[in-house]
Length: 138
Image (cartoon, rainbow, N blue to C red; front, side, top):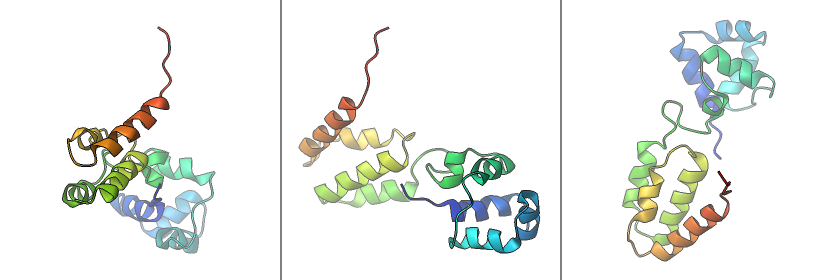
């Protein structure tokens, strides 16, 4: 999963109209620490992740970039890339990345069902996904 916590910290700090100084004060850390987080030199300590998320009013998944911060959906650019990629191997790789990085976005299922030349590989992937599902008796 691609971690985008640096960009997310900067984005949400600015969205709240906080300076780096104000944000640092809220977390009892130095301005230099916040600057290093925002530039990707370092990451916040694990204990601070829920604190930062709460300050911003977002989930920890949103903070670390486990999903698109607003909707849980993959960015439009990723689907545009998927729609313009014609090579089967690259297309399937992109589909797997969308599913891995944006687990709450089910739009990738549409692409898995498309009757394209890579349908055999897609079916294998779907079987792999289904084999990981646990069926529970009701």
